[in-house]
Image 1 (tube, rainbow, N blue to C red):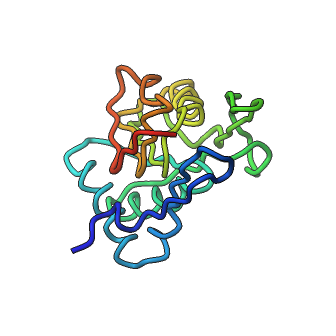
Image 2: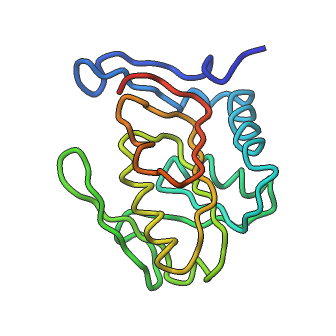
Amino acid sequence: MKQLEDYVTTIPDFPKEGIMFRDITTILQDPEGLRLAIDMLVDNLKDLDFDVVVGSESRGFLFGAPVAYKMGKGFILARKKGKLPREVISEDYDLEYGTATIEMHKDAIKPGQRAVIIDDLIATGGTTEAIIKLIEREGGKVVRLGFVIELAGLKGREKFKGYDVFSLLTYPGN
């Protein structure tokens, strides 16, 4: 039986020399790989009391929405600036070469709601950190952070001391 890491394709020197790019599209395109990833994410949440799943644009949608569906929870979109049609709350965060803004609908998180954030990858942790700020600003509580892949060399997990964090696969580099 194949393991989840068997579905990840590694592309050396992309997007620049020295980077080992971990491509999750090969998980998504294989029915067994996709099923395995979703089932593993759900297994990490099965005994947790929570209300909603929050996923970040765009690959967080691909993993978070099926998890929410399987667990009978709502799904909240965290999107790039300017993509949501109603009143939003926003948070800026740092990128390698600049800044970006993530937004959620103002009415998406209700005070007291317990949220799980699901994304495909944790690298530096900037996007997830911004989403946590949005959830907490609206009175929600982040009860777990889940990632398909963690790039441990970029130390993103260090931003989340005090939060319950899991990743399905961990790679040592960047």
